Image (cartoon, rainbow, N blue to C red; front, side):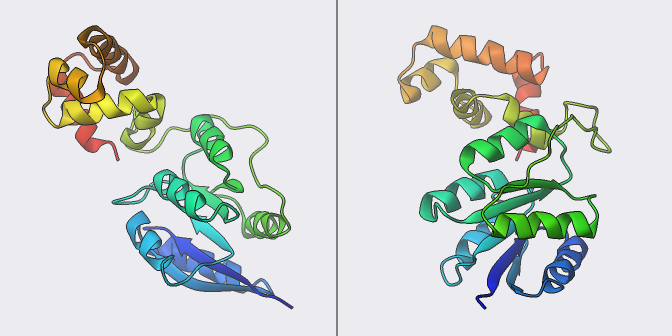
Length: 210
C-alpha cells in the first residue's frame, strides 16, 4: 500500500510535535519533515516533495498564505491543509480560492483532525461549514496585525509597501504607472480600512504586518 508523505510547517515547536504524533498514529502516513517558517518550507521542497502539507497560516519570513501560493504554482496538485488559530472568514475564503484542500482550527480534537487529513487524502476538502471572526488574545477584534493585511487589495498592499519604504505619492505613481490622484485615493482607502489617521501611524502598523 502506498504511504502518504507529509511535511509539517509551524513555528510553534510543541504544537508541531503533537501534530506529528497524530499523523504518525495513522496507518499509512509518514512525516518526512518539519519546518518552522515559509522560507524553510520552500527550501525543503527542493529536495523532498510530499503528498500533503500541514501548514500554519502565520509564520515568520514567509507566511503560510504566501508560501501556499508559491507551492501551488509549482505543484498544482499539492494537498495543503492550513491549521490555524485564526477562525477568520477572509482567510478561509482566500485558502479556498488559491486551491488549498482544507482550513482547520488548532483547537480541534485529534479525531477531527485525523478525519480531515484522511478526507483530504481521498481527494475531498476540509473547510468549516461556517466561519466567524475570532478575537486573538492581545489584540482587539479586527486589529491583529497579521489579519489586517487581508483587508487590503493587492494594489493597496503594493502601495502600502512603497509607503513603508518612504516613497511619496508622486514617486509611487511613477513606479506603479498610476496617476497621483489614484494613488491618493488608494492611500485614503488604506487609512480607512486600517483605522489610522497619519502616515507615521500607517508606517508603524505596516512594520508589524507580516
